Length: 265
Ligand SMILES: [Zn+2]
Image: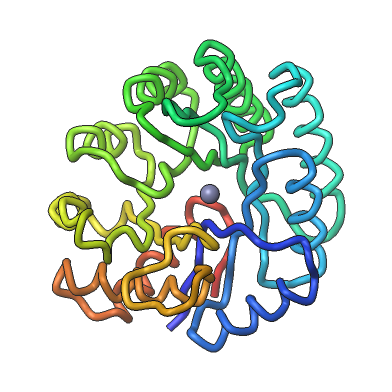
């Protein structure tokens, strides 16, 4: 069985990253996509992905990162990072993101208008570089749909990560041929509504992830989540759908190979 954690945040330390990857491999999690959310993190995950064969990078500007800088400036710098990272023999950056929309009342936010501009510029960059987008969504359903619909006919690909919305939104995302990615939220009692949504989504549109170090699955004793625990997400998905974990692993890994255009085998 080969699993891939399609969304994890790694520490800056090379040795800690190496240990995390080794513990993941012991749980059949052979590949990981490390995520960058600002320019500094992007550099860090690029360096890790250059060093570790089975680690790839998704880099982007999170809606509330680098708030002092203009969206256009940030996207220019992002483009340079990607081009530099992918100039060698390994395609290191395989997606743009996480990027998207984050609307909450509880912390310092980039104004929505500027979030939309930053997200749209990253969509345009993804199209220019023919990379898929990894989308962060907190209370941004309508804004995200509007933008994805705008670019839908121009062969934009991607995934809505850490899904925690409604079936209605999921269906609209599927209509746009995007993938939907689930985390350890699937194991939370208070998020039991997600199981009903999972049942309605065909397995060939689903990816799995940990979003580690966040979202520790139920039953895990450690304080920090790790990519190794994506196996628990796969198991939970299998239970909900009445399939074996091997089937879920096979299909979700295959989905990731298609979306990110990397042979994860
Ligand atoms: Zn994330």
